[in-house]
Image: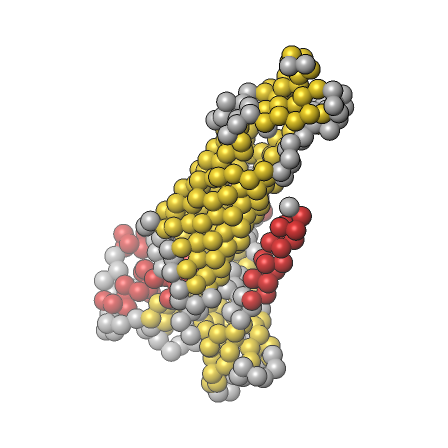
Length: 412
């Protein structure tokens, strides 16, 4: 088991290192010079303060930032422009709201992400617990902040009010388009709603084409995978100060699961939520072990259902191959076998029984890594941490932990 865990750790480490790659992109200097380069794509969640690039595959790594870069981007993904102006530093965390309605403006030199680039342009800036949206017209670099702020009105910490001045700004910006007041009134201060407004304006105005961030094209995707495999169990031991050497040898047996996977609509669908009910057999027959040559330690056939919920991160090798890492919590484990207790007996007469719990909640978690081919076939190696199977008692314990090898097939 230790060798398996070590091998899995080394595999995961090598996977992570393999994902640090450079992709084709460009940079534009403050002088307006544009150059095609290779940019390390780390899929920024917050707006980057800097980025790493290379002139070609064999050149050394260089660093770009707001002091030496006017614009940069990765072809087919995102692009960023240099912005030197005011940002709103108001927190969106309800625990840190201020009492002021007006935005808390601060001078800053940062990179803004380009969300829509046409006659009317839309940008965003993300930081810890804050998000700002900006706009500009045509080739005008006079970028302006769209104002939105939550606050406690009149110092009342029990109430939350919202400054939605951005809707008045949108009404002015799109006064000469077919965007309706109702559409603006319903538009949330979010990527999708604002991008839809700006994109529609480009379609209904003089221009019939528009460029929108490629990630906006991604929609939620759902997979359903059937997942047979094998579980390799560590020796199951019963711990009690009054007994010694009470354990069974390591075992292996069948498992079967059905995994529902919902891809999240960001980062090129690299993150997904996974939900998997699975059935596993520890033993289909009664187990018996001699302890200290005095008494017998036994367990009837034991099987269980795990229901797990977690996150998966996909890392694409090419169009058909991807590697993934996942982590999940077993939100409930249900005993469905005939085993109801551990039994201690002497001369075939039971003298002590320890009840097994019919169900346990949030009792263990899983870590996995695997490979998917053509979004159809999957091989996963997974480790399930020790989970208690006894009814809760302070002086005794029996924990089941195991390693799994799983094959998956995506049925849709």
